[in-house]
Image (cartoon, rainbow over all chains, first blue to last red; front, side):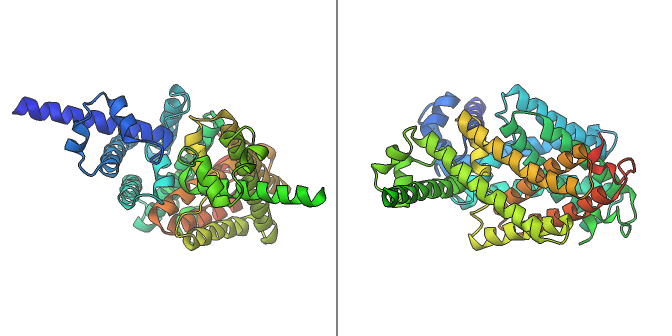
Length: 210
Length: 210
């Protein structure tokens, strides 16, 4: 029984990995079930066994796995750096290297789907929203741990996430690490100012105060 | 002859407008020629008359029109504001209003296509890259006009564009203006620091210095 369950888990993982990879490259709308099954190498019948809800259920599971993997990697990069400023530079460099190595195809695993799925599938949209919120929470937690108050930390986390997501898009379109290098450097300085300034000085107010 | 040309121009404009609207909502891969013709109300035969290159040629023309329209609107918003900081807040508020009014569907006219077309069509990718570069140039030109040196101005423009693009994506996924409000406020302060500081102080170096 254990072996059967394990084989089933492997098949399920092959399906979600193939779905995630295809959606990352070409989006939700353009990714069909037949293509996912073919890329995964899983038996055709296994799809509706594991995902009776079809494409939408498989997409949600695939985005959940990809989002959790990215969160783990982001947290590892942050925890491995000497400070948050160095961490953001490291994360941007990591993403730039991956983009270049994949011929500028593999950016954020959620972004392509996030932009189009808002008009297509509410469960898919909610899964994306949940993961973006999770990544923000990871960044905000590190900021509060280094002494930033909660509201400015959350705003800085949103700002940093938006900046990195936008730079990932520009880098793909330019086929160049330039946008990621620029935002990594800029966010490093900005985080330093936010973390080391009193909240009511002009520099400390960069993100914290309306 | 003039009347015929004008009618032809109107048909062409209907086709590019329909293509741009569909690609903005659902991306390049998922948008088919039959759907574009149907949405546009143009005669079926007009498609290959105006765009003998088919979907790719129509997509490039549609993105070019949409990108030029956005550039004009961005420049009008900048020129209508008292300073660049106020302008970036105004642009973010304008985008947030449009998103909310369109039930969070109408964000950047290029972003959805930009993320997926990098793997599909080189002319489409180049068109996106060209327009992002154009928007950056518009922002950078205003920064240099207010006294910022060229290299920091270009870096700040890339940073601001990335941040706004990322916030547009997060806002769509959250169905909330929150990310755009946060980045508008943050960029306003950041632009103020960049524009009013000597390049070798810590605040002036936010974007200017590696």
